[in-house]
Image (tube, rainbow, N blue to C red):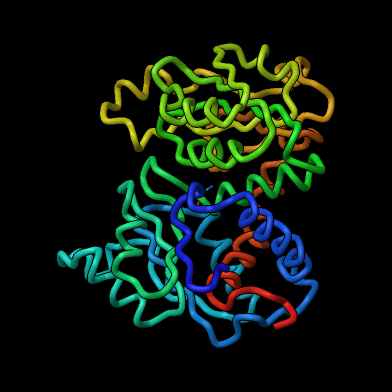
Length: 311
Ligand code: CP
């Protein structure tokens, strides 16, 4: 079902696929914490090709592979690679797939991961392509909601921030469309969720509200998912300056929130969540970042070996 499969967009996965991955990720948690030895990928190599900066995705994929007894090769900065000499993406992919058992790619161009998959006979995992998709982030986001709230169905999820350029919220919206949830969208003017994604949510029967007030949105929210304004994706820096710092989650905002609401953020944050919130019981963004390890362990084992802990 998963062996050899590319993971390019959350839209390529069915609800059953997602449930298999989330269940398998739960089984990986003790090994992700270093409490269990689980060398399922001993002798296997992950090729990690990062054309764009990353902390969490890179480190958690590396950790995931190592926790499963495998290794990683690759780069996180093209300045020391032959990309600088003009090597094409296709040739870089052909080389990396010859040296490894699966490829994990992050690229600044939307569509680059799908293009990479055309040139690789080994499974390709999209670790973020421009303003496009970030499917493994969505899987760890869904895992976090399920672990923290007990289930995904029945929750009111508020997506707040840069909904235009934020690939994490684009992916997550498509993932949530598979569940019985309500979604509210809160963004600065000009950074609204693309109409095509709002349309998909509505077509799937999801109740969608678009609003400007974070206070109003959190009053009946179960999950507040905050995103950074993606300065690097603005064609005009002046347009970024107009919206930078236009909203902030702090303890005053949490006075308006429903009991039990959790706060998530894919990170990195700039100033959209005040540090005072970090120790509040609602703050789950660091747990969420840890969850990237068991989720990516599950995915790597599924696409490289086909999964099955008993196999
Ligand atoms: N959430 C996320 O993709 O973080 P990084 O950019 O640090 O990988």
